[in-house]
Amino acid sequence: MRLRGPVRLAARAAAWAAGSGLALASVALALDVAEPALAHNPELAGDVVAFYPEHPDDEVLWGASAIRAALDEKGADNVYVVLVSQGRGADPLPRPAGWDALSPAERGALRVTEFRAAMHALGLLDDHVIVLPDTVPGPADNYAEMRTTALELQRAAERQGKSMTHVAHSYVLDSNALHRGDGQVIRSLLDEHEITSALFWIKPWYRFRVPAADLVRFQSLTQADVDAVRAAIREYTTSDPADGRFAIGFRSTPGYFALLQMDPRMTSVLHTAAVAG
Image (tube, rainbow, N blue to C red; front, side, top):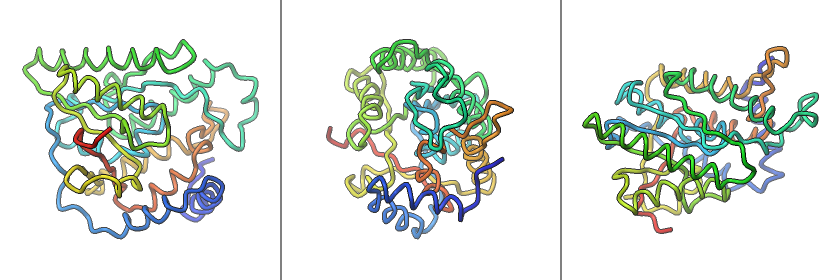
């Protein structure tokens, strides 16, 4: 079974938003949908680009069009997605049968399955999709592994004579502390001059708090890009227990998936490191 269709998604989104105080989010996305398409996506500075979602589905919800733009511009050989945490604390509703009996490691494995399938659908090379170990409760080990991995990717690019851009969550404009911590890892590497180029994705309604000169927007401008993003979304909204698929990402935050699909160009909104924080 696939949980899809704009009416069903919109209904789930409305109920979820009402319970989560996201009226502002709905208004912001409505404004975003009404905006004209970009003539072209901005050029990413690095020859190689790496994205660092904190949890499975973050990369699609907030950065799918940016990832597609990187693939289109740099080629799949030069794009990585690094999953920082498996998101074992997800609380899907309704909960899949047997969910409460699963160990944290089993829950993480199910989420990683969704993530890898979504990245394949988006166009990533399988060996450029990196899942970091998630063995110790709490974020400290995740951030340490993220920092190490970012430096390894940076040094590997430099050995090939290539520059690199790193894309993480905003270090300041996000209600989720784990997301902010993810962004702070990349921001600190930039401040320490260990890396030279970084961008930070935000939920679209935060764009009203970013100076226009520091906003960077990406859209799915071709049918191939739109189809790829929709295919990635389907990997998170597919429920097929016989195949070990439980739509965990969708069940956890259905409203965010609906809001993304309300935008025909699946806009990704990022900011530069010039934003204070």
